[in-house]
Amino acid sequence: MAAEAETLTLDSPPPQSQPEKVSVSFSIWPPTQRTRDAVLSRLIETLSAPSLLSKRYGPVPTDEATAVARHAFSSDSM
Image (cartoon, rainbow, N blue to C red; front, side):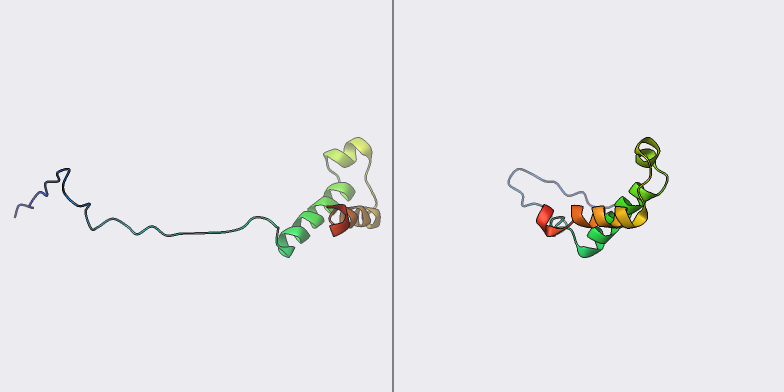
């Protein structure tokens, strides 16, 4: 059984099988609280655990790193 070929001309309407356009919207700013907590945790870890920064400048005690990180992400500092 041979399939019929569809001939398109400049006057032809577009084929009806085109997918519908879907509008997707998302926001990356301001960051969610979950993202802020993850960044805060990572900053504390970077300052207090062995890392490139702590190897070069020395480790910061965890409680001091926590205070510095929280200050860096406070609404007053932005």
